[in-house]
Image (cartoon, rainbow, N blue to C red; front, side, top):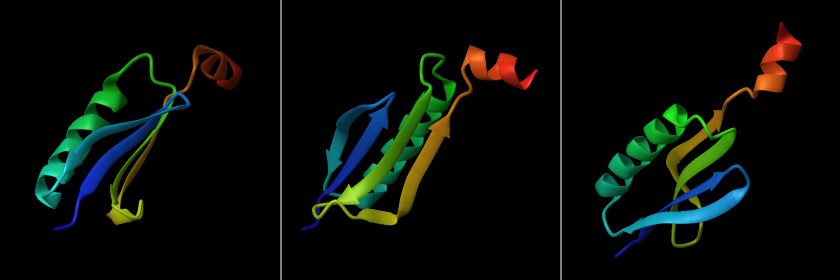
Length: 77
């Protein structure tokens, strides 16, 4: 049986968020985690992926999250 992990790198810190034996559960967790990170005011950058036991990204489930910092917003103005 294949295992899947939801991994993230948020502001430079790596974490295995959850592990799954079913891909459907991992997909739901992926979308929930991405939604949370997109709405988190303290997140500057993040990458979220579903990987298999060989750490290969599964079905292109990867999201790159980027929020402009106050300095970047001022520079753009």
